Amino acid sequence: MALSESLRSQGQQEASLLDAIRTADRELTRHPVFGDSKRIHALVLERYKFGLELFAERLPAVAALLPPLTEGGDARARRLYRDPLVRKVMEAAFKKLEQGALVAPQAELEDILSLAAEALKRTDIDGPCEARMSRRFRVGPRQDTWVWSFDHAEDPVLRELREGFDRAFSSRGSRPGRIIQPEPEQVARLDRACALLARVLPEVGASVLGHISSICLLEVEVEGGKMMSASGGDGIPSTVFMSPEQLRNPWDAAGHLLHEGLHLKLFDVVRAHTLVDPHSDPLEIPWRDIPWPMVRAIFAFHVYAHIELYRAAVDQADAGLLREFGEPGSYTDNRHAMSVSRNNESVPYGLSVDRTRFLGKHLRTTWASRLTPEGLQLTRWLQQCLAPFVDWDA
Image (cartoon, rainbow, N blue to C red):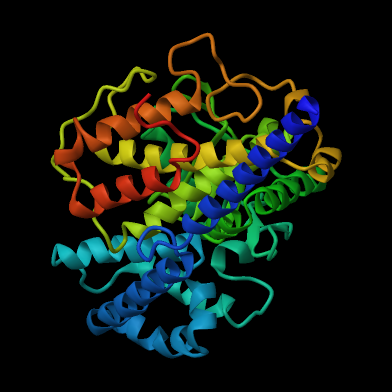
């Protein structure tokens, strides 16, 4: 009798936890500013559409490109603005516009938009970057994320991509990296990781994957050792970089996609919203040797909070997922705080939950004055959504 009551109680607890996971998965994609990707994408789209009109008023070459770039409605515009280089040159033009320096000619902007107009005539690609891939690979539940594969360095578009890559990683103190030409097996593993993320967290997974336009396999040395994954940020927008080694463990590969996709999602949010005081002093972070800017702290907290939900969902994975993808603990990867199976408990803040609590505590207390009202709102919303999984007062 006691055993049967214990089993019933355990079953009720598991059902309650699964309900909490489903609720958090849903709520993290519902906030109109920070969660709802449809609204976030719509705001970004309107920003770029309006920007194109502003640029055309000042640049005759861009004005001549308006018809082929604007016909076809929002569906075509979404294809145009998924391209990393289109986004990059648009952002650079916005900065010049703010500085009063957007005057003809603007060769980079004009050339990339001209190539984009040509690419939009096709239906099998999204933009000029994908058009130059030597082998065509796509991954993800909607098969709308392309994988870098090129070997024609003399191409000016690919050269611009490479220069953007070098700038993005040199700012992180990295050594020159090596872009990997993907093999079909690696692409299949990427696709498998996308599928796993979408199944473990159906709503959050679909949301973050929708912010990833392209994925590049990359080997590079960064602060603290080999890079596991990274997002392109403003250097190469809407792009995720991942070490091929990280593809062996599908659970952690899915976690890396979640991590970097969340960064890209928040990059899209901050196109229209300000989260931190830009004049804040750098922060001392106990698990890093170099200070962080305030914006990095809130971006990191945004990721760590979601990772705790992912970890809780992986712990409750059903038998079908475990048969298909293996037991998370069966993979012998290096230990790191983002891993769902092999945290490094031997070092301070080696657990992601400790980092989550640290950042959450300071964002709502010590650092709160450095956040804008929207930054405070984001922090409080994340803590509320994750309350069933993180003891914020511990």
